[in-house]
Structure formats: C-alpha cells, structure tokens
Length: 396
Image 1: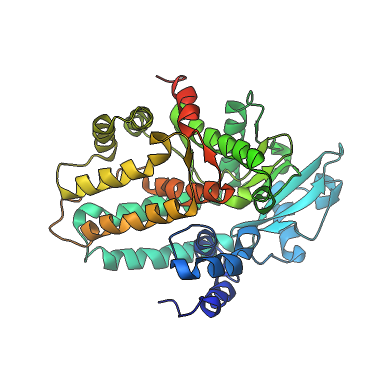
Image 2: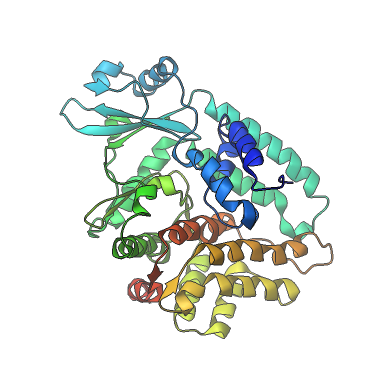
C-alpha cells in the first residue's frame, strides 16, 4: 500500500529502488511514471514527477565494461569499427545504453550496447516470476492459462535481448513507412551491429516532454502521426510495436516523428488481424453489435458474464473511434486502466466462464495503457476516426 499524503516519500523510495535495477523491475517503474490509473489520483502528479527520470534513463554501465562487449561482438577494435566514439552514454535504459559515435565515412550514429550481465539478470527475474506464476496458477481458473501468459511475456523479453532481431524489425518498419513524409525510422548499419550491439543513424530533435509544451496545432499534428504509425502497422501489416514508451519518440519542427526501439514487436495471427480490422471498422461506424461479434471471434470467448464484461471493456477502449473528434485525456486513460478491475474478478473466480487469452495478444493492453497515456499528455482533440478510415481503405 502507498503511504498517505501526496505520496512523495513512497515515490522517492520507489525511485531509489527501481532506479538502481535493470530488466523487468526497471520497465515496471518506467510504465508507472507515465501510465495513468496505476496509482491513486491524489498521488499521481507526485509519482510522475519523482519517477519521470526513469523514462529517460537508468544507471549506465562503465565504459571500461562496455568497450569489451562492443569489440567482442563486432570482432573489431573500437578504433577500427568507429572513427569516433563517446565514452559517456547519451542515454541508458533497462537493457542497454546508447553512445554517440561517428563512422569512418563521417556518418553520425547512435550505438546501443547491452549492459554487461543484463541477460543473466533478466533470466533471474523471469525465473522468479515463473515461480510466482506456478504458485498463482493453483488459485485462479485453469482457463486463465497463467503459465502460457508468463511464457509469452518471457519470450518477448528474451527477444528484446537479440539486437539482430530488432535490426530486422527496424528495417521492416522503415521499408513499410518509406513513403510516409511524417514517419522516420533510423537506418541500421549492419556492419556495426550484432546480437548485443545495434548501430543506427543518429537523429536529433525534441524529446517528448518538450513536444508536450508546443502549441496545440503542433501537438495535434504529432498525435495524428502517432496514431497512424501504430494502427497502420497493425491493421495493414499485422505488426504490433508493443513498447509505446515516451522516450522512443523524437519530434521534429516540420511535423515528422522519428520512432526508436523495435525490440518488442509482435505479429498478429491471421484470425486476430481480421478481427482487429473488423473491430476498427465497426467502431468507426458505431456498429456495436458487429464490433462485439468481431471482438468475441478475435478473443475466442464464449457467451457468459466474462464475455459480456470483456466486450464492454473493449468497446470503451475504442471510444476514440466512436466520437469524432475525441480527446484522449488522462481521466479517460485512468478510467480505461481501472476498468480492468471488472475483468479481474473473473480471474479470481473458479466458477467464472473465463476463456484463455489467445496467443500473441497478451501485450496489446500496452496500447490502452501506454500509448493512450502518451496521447493524453499531448492533450488535444483529434479526429482519429478519419485517420482510421484512410488506413482501413488500404485493406477493406
């Protein structure tokens, strides 16, 4: 339980703990710093202020330990791989840190290097989580498939440790959005990349906090680009980037946004992709009956109280498409997060008609929690339905 008052002491204690951890705990702390509804309203601003530092960085690894990782991974000395390399990192996150560097052809690059020992640390975290899941499985309905959920999340974290996979995904997104003038994906330099090192073009611009302070028309334009990036990738290509972290965006004066970090990307199964397209189209047209049919098909539910509550929850999540224009604000996001309490009662009841969560969609709540929280901080009214119509015209 959180302490009384404005929660400053508790938040600072959380920062002290989470700020010195890496892996899963650090990611939880980063989400708590910007997702509305995870802490009480009276303590929300305090937690966001105190924990905001987690969004931009976690403790960095000393260069003396990072350099051997780079040289071992690339099979080259640092001097042969790069013409210049800044020892002090420009940013540090839960899995790796980023250094400015310059290639021998003078190209400026950002070099992401994994923290030494992070793989073992995450495996320890996952092992501990697995033990808790095994215990919890005996107290919740077997249909919840707690072990399958844990395994899917665990695999997603393990995938994030393979920068070769991230490089492939980054190149895939770059190709998909190559003709969009407002979406920029940094180029990857394969010769300077490996499993634990990822080198991309260096991009400069405004960070998220600065973007939230711009005039309303600028913020609205950015919100439109963010929505298009997320849902065009999902609805056209079936690619879901499950890490909508505020630190993964760089904003430019001409309205462009550079998107970073493709470590947590999932591909929707054909059945779920078809259902997602139908749900978006139904929401845009305000057809709740059709929406519920598509959602039930995609979630593979069966008639009963759990299905009713789940479909009600999803219909509420799609409110931005049902009212145009719609302002995703912090109150709405907090309500979305808290609405999951209705679903939790089914997870704790042995007599519930709970159905297993289909594979591949466990992390989709990051859209309603993380991505919606990002849009809420831009604090603008946007015709999201109009953008969706343009996207759906490409596939329907």
